Length: 170
Ligand SMILES: [Zn+2]
Ligand SMILES: [Zn+2]
Image (tube, rainbow, N blue to C red; front, side, top):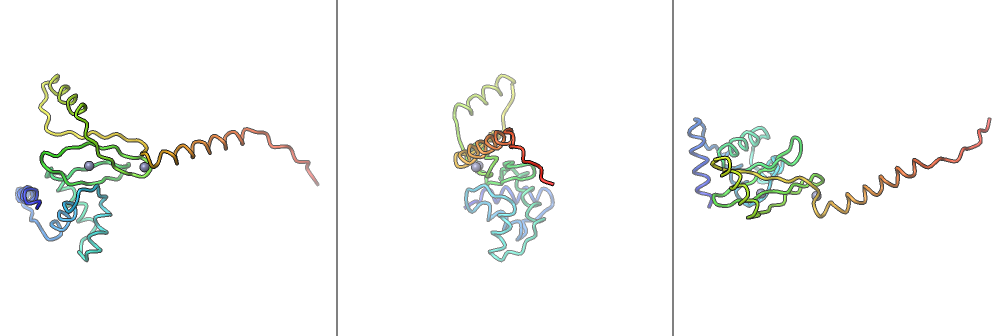
């Protein structure tokens, strides 16, 4: 399993005079074990629970290499936060990202894919890859969002109301 991707990664490293070290292998195995969107620190914790000695810096460097080699995708979830996922040839999906909880939802819409191809054709552009991300509030977070908005409206209304003046006692 994952032989093809492992081969791509090994060749990529070789071209840069790097080796598939035990640490790099461990990060690869953890990412390719299942289809999820991992944060770097989640990977670190998972590897630590498996008693793998690995530094945070090594994880970040390895993730950079994996993304650059094209076998791992990166989704930006906040200003300085990414989630990483394994990519497989022939598999493609895009993402909805929740601003509140960071949940990443995958979707595939043939109409959008088709439209993107049309746009490329119009510009004589050969598409090699794309990533489409929409940011917003997920189904689970929307009720909380609505309640928070109602609370702040109520607070604004209350503060607009005049407090009855208290008699000053000396
Ligand atoms: Zn959410
Ligand atoms: Zn995904």
